[in-house]
Length: 195
Image (cartoon, rainbow, N blue to C red; front, top):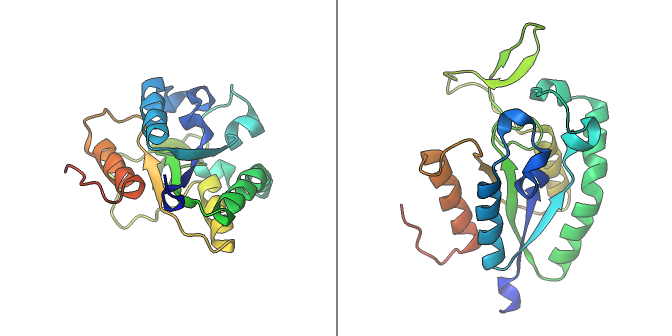
């Protein structure tokens, strides 16, 4: 393997350890197995950061929306958790590895890439459940950790695509197919992807 082929990827911890996920996102071990096997078979080094929701609130936390996590305390917690993974990214890049991206989790208020309009609960705060028929002009934000990660990479002058794994979608769904197509194009840019 030549130096040009050396690749690393950043991933949310729950993609390796589904037990970290809040219960409404499910604990999809077969999907984690499929993702890890794919990356390892193609010699992609994996850097994960600790789950910010688990490390801040434990395993028995209630599902929440992005709004509840969007505060100075949680943002600072996320920045602390990213210190060592960002040191690793810098060291790998300095040693001629290529960061091929970040994989977040669909509908995660912290690690999601496309957090759109969500339902409001009885307390008039954002729920973790997306609206049934979102409008195309609704603002879309990243999850809190994904947003901070994007800022940290930008500070380093590093650009890499952000992928969002739809963990609740069946394997044959269009969303899941789109995820795999985009990931394969980045990991194996010279491979022809079946549409």
